[in-house]
Amino acid sequence: MKRDLLNYLENWKSEIRRKPVLLRGARQVGKTYLAREFGQQFDNFIEINFELTPGLKTIFNKDLDPKRIVRELSVALGVNISPGNTLLFFDEIQECPNAITSLRYFYENMPEIHVMSAGSLIDFVLDEIGIPVGRVIPIYMYPLSFMEFLSATGNDRLRDEISNHSPSIEMPEPFHKDLLRLFGEYMAVGGMPESVKKWIDTGDLKSCFEIHRLLIDTIRLDFPKYVKRKNQKYVEMVFNSVPRLLGNKFVFVSVSPHSRSRELKPALDLLTKAGVVHIISHSSSNGIPLGSEINPSVCKVLSLDVAISQSILGLDYGQWILDPSQAVINLGSITESFVGQELLAYSLPTQPGGLYYWTSENKGGNAEVDYVAANNGNIIPIEVKPGVTGSLKSMNVFLERKKHSPYGIQFSQRNYYIDERRRIVQYPLYAISSAISRKFVKG
Image (cartoon, rainbow, N blue to C red):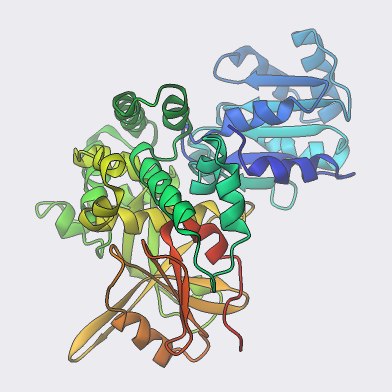
């Protein structure tokens, strides 16, 4: 399965003086696979896994001279590491903190060598030793986006239709129906690479369910690695509660009425650091960057992947295959979390993705916009509607108050259209990738 990040790495490969790449993201989102796939473009691909070969860590204990490190690695592995022809990949690099620090010197003293690295739960190690700022390119990875899913399932033609389609013109109905059907497949299978591959190979949704369960077990097995035993129960509580609270303000009393926020808040922070959950911060949305006006005590939360959320909840998500239109209506909170997952997937890969929403509490009622995003210097409100109809009162309130927002976006099952009077652009749920990358309304 080709990941879109390969395009970024191909540009990086051709740079004359390049910084080492550090792949960051939750466990099993495809970091190692991406490195191996990219490695096929080199004469030599050398993968060093510090968990599998802990003896190689001693090479980094003497000093951090990259020329000596490369020379000794060549001898130890019996391979030739030559500039321009070799991709040197340090996997599970968190097991060798000195290797992380050495990345700085690869850039400063040996930039002709292509160096990539990745690790599970690496953010916990970076908190202790730091990252060589300005000397390493962090690349953030997420589960496959819907567009990547289309490519993986052999639907590049439909992907091109989305990429090149104008929001002012309806998608031809046969294409629209096919894309909604494939959207339903994605919602059942999710974006975790192993599950997508199983779906491609077998078309057996039950096998995908089993993979989701195993992924959840793997995530839980990581809990002892970043929290003391006495606090593991709080991490478990928060992890299990996130899917249940999708789309709602995340209140700790809803997680456990018998636990205190000072016990649950650190657990949420740890899950966020591990990339297992993502925070949707409340922003006043008066200017860019949106993160400058967040209220840290108010947030929503979504899980790493829509299929994992449904698996934790024990939902029969085969309904996405049988009747995706009805499933969107029945599982509106899951659909809303899909939009957040997509917004992260299409964010700038070298910066951690941020998600934001807006609320206004006034006498006579509350207004809430599901997401707000920065686009072309503007702040764009985003609403997610389960059906083909629905009120957009909150969107209208936002557009009336925020004069710097020229239009709003609605995602639903409905085909493309532009309501110029209300300044709203309607996009189908399958077209999030193009909706966040264009300027739609004049002025």
